[in-house]
Length: 364
Image 1 (tube, rainbow, N blue to C red):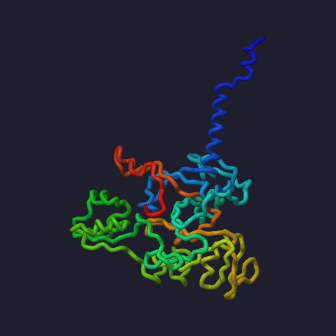
Image 2: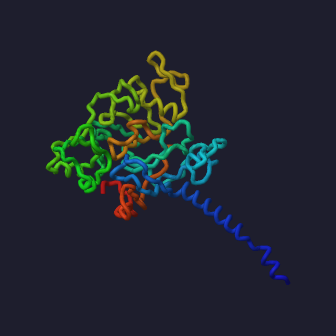
């Protein structure tokens, strides 16, 4: 019997073996990224000093339950655009409804959450830009910010230990040296309008250390006064006169909860009713019409969350663009596996103390 003939007929070529291996690796990686865990990086300082620019994270999809793909026709490992040549990395020819697999946890207060930025109406939900913030308000909560301090249901909320606010700093003229800034891990801010004056985002501990310096004549945290309307603050309504330091009170929509609609709150909930839940809404002669019918109340079809960055004065968050719908939630940040400091030199570019750190949620 010609055994060589039998062996050659069943043997794969090297090229075929490589192709099979690549296909298997792509499919396996796609399944892991979609349903179990995905890597993300921190591009902005909105979560400093809890999370740093250059932190590389693993984000769990299983905690809240993995969201099944809503735009399944897409190029693997590309979120929005095709590198170099440009163009969309996905097709909207086939779209699926929102569905989430069972998880073993709900989104809790103070969880650090990755989600799709909800203001990108021109993109499918699962192709909107990824944001990462702290969930400070969950469905059914009433949230208010009073003179920078966050309150949930009338009680002071947990203040993240490494959260930051903007401080105005005046010195005797000698300024703040690079050594002082490095020692206190001060990276966000710089010189102000006059010589010897600075404006930096500081943690409470960094502010206390600067205040001890003999050349620092004054150090004051910035606080926008109540009633000072800022037109970039959600819901962009001058009647409410809200700003980032004095915001609300506002009820965070909960699935099945009913709110009474009024001229005072219609701007707060209009986007949820129309953009996120698919209804039409008109205001005519002081009355509200939803899907053409006069309505004095509305019952929400899904849960919503209020997200804020720990860098409270340098974070584009729910104070600026409103609630995050439940179908926009991607996963929970759980682990820092790498941290890269672009301003460091040689081996100091790696923040060694941050490597392989579990992300804690109880101010540890």
